[in-house]
Image (cartoon, rainbow, N blue to C red):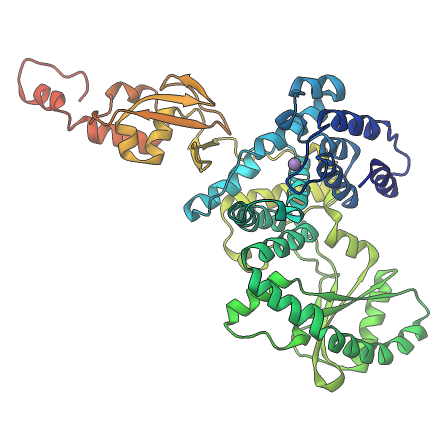
Length: 489
Ligand code: MN
């Protein structure tokens, strides 16, 4: 990968912009990473270059691509965050800082932390562009995962599949979601992946293409009569979704015609309906499978006509008919439109997802620039890491004692000190989003300190302190010996 390729890609979507900054960022990163190699043996600079290229592909703006080029500089080189700030200004420095912070999130496959990690991921991101950079960073890391030990490969793949990919789906970044999922699938279930790859991408390819030809032979002459420009694409389901479908239905996935759809792209909305008419006169539509998402777009803004027909040999084939603009929006449109879609769980989304959707709708309505989007939906909550990288959700202004009780009652009862981000801290110090907190305990200690009630913020900590402090011998003595007055009831 070269900086020139990135500049060229960027100019496809931003023809009039000054690209000097891209070259400056490249020089800065190249110098900072000089001599460093990736685990694969490549020069390190290839990683930020690929990350930046992926960003250019999804039509990201200039500051985002600059931040993509220098995203690993403060964390992995002698250059500091201040150096980035001095050279590239606050906007880019903040993007880089956001990526560094997200890098601290680690998922070890423990399910009860999963939802919190997802929330944390979004809570720590005040600028949506940080998420795009993090996704592209992760995508390139996955593509070069073979350089790492197997255990680490699996950890990263699982984290991506359970944290990153669902967030990409929530934000409507389908193209990235599919790519992330298939790469994770390959590392987590190598045998299944190879089996499906062999079956669907190699063996049945010929069969599929033959069938596709049969459809084209009937369809193309009719399309030509319309005298319009059209494109026909075969949209093959990605392997991970086939795997999921097989698991859900608990059967082998033999019906090849279920795994692809034909997508027809035409210049305008009128032509969409004309093409639909042709398809329905050529082949019999399957009842109840026609969906007009142009007249009635999905809540996330998705537009297209969908219909399933009985094609040659009476096999069911799905068609998707749309304009180029609709197609772009559904695949890469994140720079302008990002929206929510999650087929499986739309009915019962947790509140915080609904809040995101609302923000997204607002954005679609006002057509605001992406950089102005702030994800301030977690105003009253913070997320704090344990030393193992597990995430805990706490009330704003919470203290190490709140955190200790969130982990375990015994940790709370035995807490004597705290280390926040490698620094010794007091038990009443206010915690901030993304803090890494370690609690120092004294196993000999059995009861909490009642004074903690003065500063704890969570109900859980307060309840536990009251419950256990009451049991302390001193409390009992105070209560039963007249003349000694207890300060607390
Ligand atoms: Mn990176």
